[in-house]
View 1: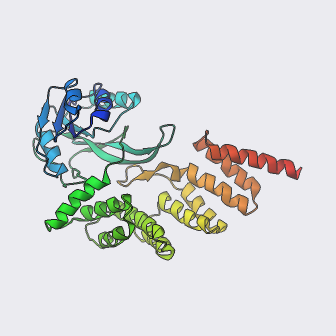
View 2 (view 1 turned 45 degrees about the vertical axis):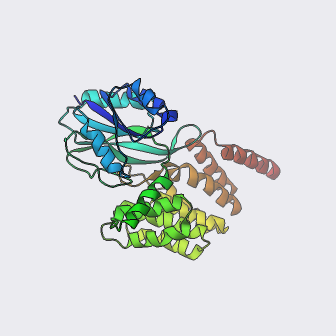
View 3 (view 1 turned 60 degrees about the vertical axis):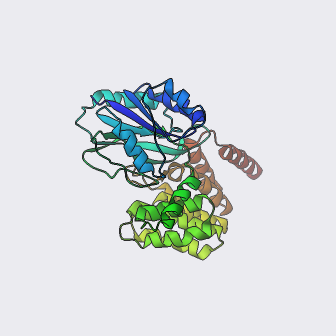
Length: 358
């Protein structure tokens, strides 16, 4: 059976740490908490769950801190969480069942689903697979001062276990990247990608554009990050009112691999904003007919494979005068999101239109 050392880095996380650690009681055999200089009640809260609390002199290097936390682990496998991460009771039970049924030497790396955005009902709207539980090799595994990760190795297993992650602090990431630039540290493709992405998230669109462009020319850039970079770069162009570059960049992503529904929805949105209803409907229909491949390493925007294209197609075909087709897409949208206010509004709209025709 797998045993789990849960390893968490904290810094003034008193507001969220209790919720995070209470989720872990079901599956964690020990909790390793590494504090990087908290001045609030973080350590006091942690002490109600574990006596394995370690102080760490923060070096502006997340990989180094995580490697320090893993070095304190004594179980067969190490698991990491951020202090804002949570698992529902259902997901806790799924993880416990996996742990109970899995031999300790059977899995080197477990990939679980990281939900980075939820709708009002708690349903994931954006998610990706991430390495979450890793065999305790007693060696440093984490790489990268910021946006740290463990390169895949050994027997990798994927499980439908969801962990909710709050949006990370891009300004803190940029602080580290700027320190790296001042120290003349050579950026890897991953560094370049995340540096540009953090600039985007802090609304520094003009600055992000050349960083994304440089990333896309790098030989060691990963496929999924290249595709996502095209999507985010296009958004930067949109914010800078460079619409021709925006649509050109979206189409360029098709030279890399099969189209993604996320990109097709963005193209549909581009034409929708221009009231080009036929072109918009064309791309939304392509998005709707695509299947997810959840084992891809990129971010999956769930609504692009269902609700979003349906509700937009309803509007497009209404503008084209094809009301029955528009109505059918609205009902299809209701399958994905039964409580949608837009669906309810559209139903009333079509009922009124049918009444006026009779």
